[in-house]
Image 1: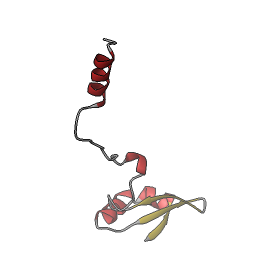
Image 2: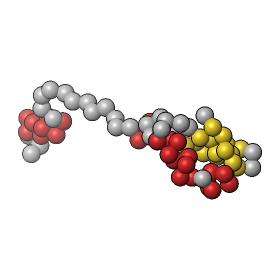
Image 3: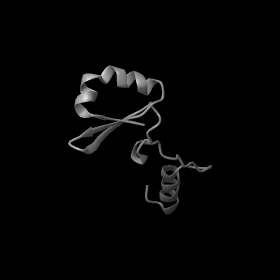
Image 4: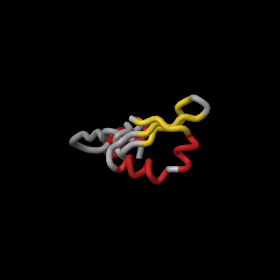
Length: 77
């Protein structure tokens, strides 16, 4: 993993993007602190709130059907 200053990254961004395409990672430093990591797509984990959730399914009638049947049985409808 290569570390570069923000100014160096700004001046040579195209080269660093090319390096990321080759699988390399670059850490960008600004005022002595890490501010960004550039790497190959898919190398950085996707936040959990962006991943699709599990879809639960149950065999049988749906909830709305069960409610309507219960109301018919109780004489509410």
